[in-house]
Image (tube, rainbow, N blue to C red; front, side, top):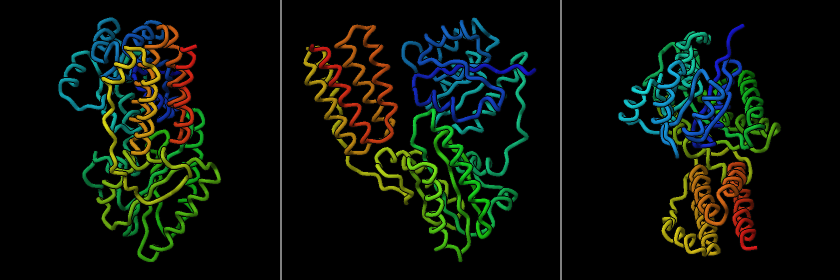
Length: 395
């Protein structure tokens, strides 16, 4: 029987940890995610107890960062494979990682499931007793995805001939808005539905691919005669998806005759547009979004901290609520809204609770924040949470 490769994830961002766990069907690849930690210190404790074969580790983390963590792991357990993940392409990080025995260094903003699997297999197969089967090169769809991400400057004639047979292109993305447990199965169902729908079409080409755990990409390739028909077909596709689940959000690009022109709108979609679903109450499949230019005031951390230090908690909570309201009006990105709110809530909890109780409440509040699927739910759940803890403290 083949030995399963045990992997530990160490990253301070819950969203990233969940993404690494669910963006790939690890069981199918011969990999088991055995644990996760939010910093290097906790990661070391799990290494002791779980003895993973491989670690996926962030660089910048609180308490103990990835550089110090990997240095200790490499010294004590040189047989453990390490893959470093970072949002920064900085030479000093890469150099430090290589000195600490890191097997690969991946950039979070451009990371794809295929790249992650390839890196895990490359590092794992150097570990004694572990052998994960390698895929024989990239298929045409994977090459196209690499092209969209700028990893290939141009598509080969072979890839173009196998994927596209018409002169016009539109690219779209779909986001599944659900908690992680349900999201994975829904993504599979919707991906299957879109693929099946595309295979039914003979008068144009539909290419479907999964970008990450909750995002599906679609390319529509058609001729001049199908220009009007294609939008009707896209509406039919939306109806089919809504039949499976209503909590979806889609964005579709303008038409282009130059395949190179798909890169920029796609990059904007997966980095910004698709995450605007947080601010949409109804599921839609619309053109690309013009983001609001309105910007709010910079948050007064000094004033907030001063309120906490002088036990003016009511004022601190009012500042928090004002920030949330203003941030929602400006439609700042979901990721930043949630992270900033978590930081402020944590500072509030640390000030009004004992250390042990603050940590317990932190997990509860962070769970509330991470679990919200849209801005209305966020406002309805998060603001009362702040007041609840404040009132509990006052009584």
